[in-house]
Length: 125
Image 1 (cartoon, rainbow, N blue to C red):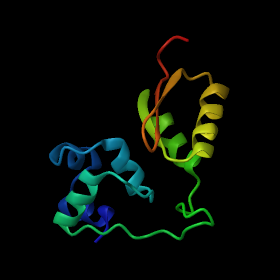
Image 2: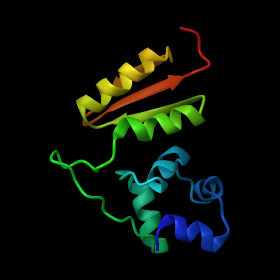
Image 3: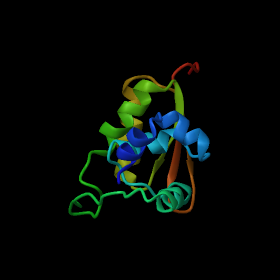
């Protein structure tokens, strides 16, 4: 059963699901739209509930065959602020170009294996 199937069966909204299981709404939203996740908490809850996460076809770099920026633009358009994890340098560069183009204030913090981009559309530059 997929996440969509589970939500429909339980008559539950994604926001309720995220609160009930203490999971990040934005990451769940991306998963619901077909993105892959590395979030161990989400994976654990899915395993416990019997929710499958169908594997997507991979492109030549081994990434899901789905445009990273198109996924993130949806979340940016829906939320006034948030954080985005980038695991590939070209994703970080695409995201920075997009945020700069639309004059959305942001900052980047680098971790061991990814970059964390925090943005806030309501902040002043």
